[in-house]
Image (cartoon, rainbow, N blue to C red; front, side, top):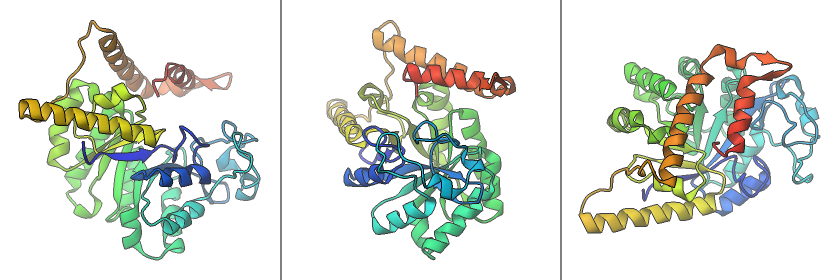
Length: 328
């Protein structure tokens, strides 16, 4: 636990407008270990920093990024702070160079064309023609196995840290197995970034942990914000926690560290993961969330769930419901 990395989700979205220069600066001031951010590609091939494929949630006009030009997106104003504008990949790379102690985690959305990988790679070299530098300052995050294979076949991922971002342990297994089968240290999977509730399951704890440890695959959790949930990281091989409020999360991790220390001194053993008793309030929440996680994971891989009716998919409705109950 002493080495658990604090990853600022969309920089510092808990207190500042997500994925903005202000959030990046505040995350750096808070000394986060890694800043996570999201990439989309415009119609004219410019890579921009935005979580959604459209702009309506956080900006003053609702545009589809893949159908818009960069010159139009530059004119948008942030809803929370109109003084803030959308950033491009070039902006954050130049920011990174000006803040050499920073490390970026790029969440590259699969709704883009895979060309975004090549353009990102090209932009790295354009901003600073030094792959050694970028390999130590950047983590690539992709969602689907064919994107991982594409990054390997094109050489983009060579010697870089690459993680799979997923809610599904099945998908995580696909990446791990492909990396093992490939058996090439130049393109070895660095880590998995999974929903934190997936690590409460017996499948993760009994089946996946031995494989992860054997192959030195790092585990990142998203998006973990509550103190009670940091407690469940004790005894698990967690490398990083993606969080909306890095300052609070560091405090929670310190509390977990103290828990480990106290237990180690009293038992002389390394603490193990301890699930709550099922018939307590905490236990009902714990096991209830596991069932919700399993249900949603299964649904997301059903083709019908993504079909739209009156412009809205069932997957979107489920996502909004889960946001209401603070599952995400």
